[in-house]
Image (cartoon, rainbow, N blue to C red; front, side, top):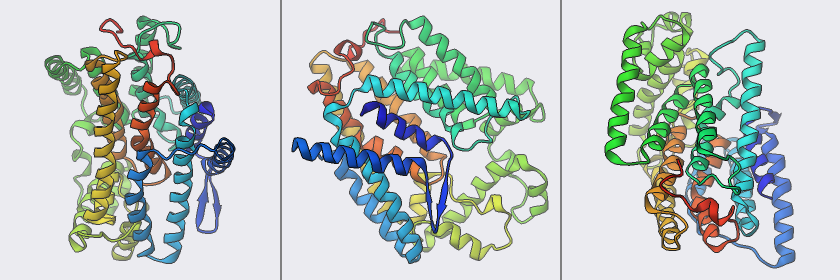
Length: 422
């Protein structure tokens, strides 16, 4: 079941879609339905159905999300209700399977599957003449930010026979090799996430080394940018846009001819425009928001002349929820995050007490899990991926609890992290 759940998640990154009326179906939806029916039937036979606390923390936000969608119109409400139902089935499948969940199998399947998707993404771009800037396949490109999260957790575990990525030297070679691919991809959020994870792994999470490493790393990048002007090619422009995000968004929002004639302006310009318009929408209805998916519908009615790239949704899940679901929605969303972190800290404390994990390593593992996912959602549009990511965040402490009980452990030695692990 662990491999099945991993393959289910990987299906979100394939990009295949089927439009059925107002509903868009993905392979993830069909795989989730099959997995849920199988897991539920097996649980009924065994008369053992577990509903962990993580599932309950999701309910308030899911309720607000769906009710808010119906405030727009019935079609919008039904579409979001189906999406939440599918994600809920995935969450229940994972919850029901916790007593048979093997983390090492799950992480290995995800790791290998994301490598396959990454290599396919690179091959597709190169075969189509794009030797850098591998971002044109919208779904597979997310492996550039997600795969290092899995790899960093594995690197924090001791390299013994239970660890499928053996040896610290081989682990760092894989890390550096993938870092080169991340750089060549030009995926800005992946570059930022990879830099943060690299500093945390190199310094083992110690505060002073983290600060020193960040300053040194920032200095190296700043020097490179000073030597390479903004017009020094695609990668140069991408790096400059990270440290000067408004530089490519300076044309007046109403001078559409300038924006349309310069595609390199589009990404940051759209984010800036969405932020400015989102603020006005939020102030109009701060408590309950303008409704799930209400931002785009209101934007199109107010600015019907906008080009397509400016009519996109808000690419920041935290801000989108504040605009569309208001303070009420944001509180329920933050509740999932806060309870997850607090419960994960408690589970890590129990693992420390049982000498399965030392304190520094446990805190570092939480950092390399939560921080990149927060960045991912902070620059990602709403959809199934965002809801599934929130589900994994909510259930992360419940997965940790099974490690202590032995029901899902990848080998007790895998969870013993020593100072010399790296």
